[in-house]
Image (cartoon, rainbow over all chains, first blue to last red; front, side, top):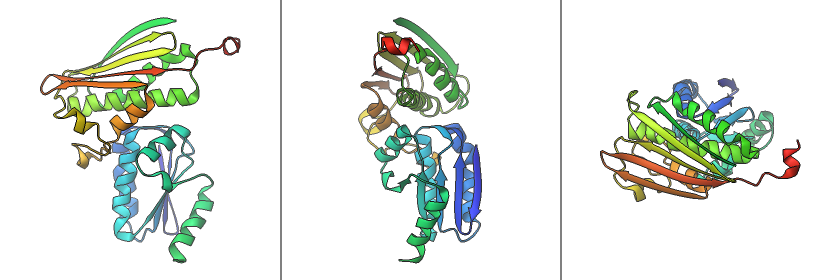
Length: 116
Length: 148
């Protein structure tokens, strides 16, 4: 359901299956712990393999943005389905969406973090 | 075509997936597009989740009931609970409003339901429960797609 990897100081969460209220409750604390382990500069939500998401996904991502706030961490959401993209746009998260590979977004975060 | 169904289940979170799956099967004869399916599933998921967590506080005994009707290419549906009721429906429908911020409810449920349906109405009274009604039009099934 949720694969969590850390690449340098970026947490990559790969979601699969259906992200609803029940699943969000199951994975929330694991994702939070990975943010609190140390210096995390950003989180990438890879939704390429996610089949379904409702507003529970918005709650989960906004909650982790709050976890990241003390570290000034960036949040990126990659490859959501068209329906998910609409949900993110309604919720003000449209500017966090990218289409492309995890590697290309890590490159962008590197740019955002180290060149400003 | 015309078809009708009723589905009732107890208020536990596991039944959010049951409701989505059952309702997706129900609309399959309309030959919906992938986007129509996922929008419809999202509406069902939001309405059922609200009934389970806000209506009944996940009590595991009270029943949520879905009634659905297919008439031509229109699906009409109600999601009903006899639970807590909504104190102020207008406020509940505002984007980002939630009574359960600690559960990380985003407050986007009604906004999503309104955006993905063709009409939405909510009847609620404190202590008596809530009925969410919505309609969604599906693109007509063409002869060409019937042949597939």
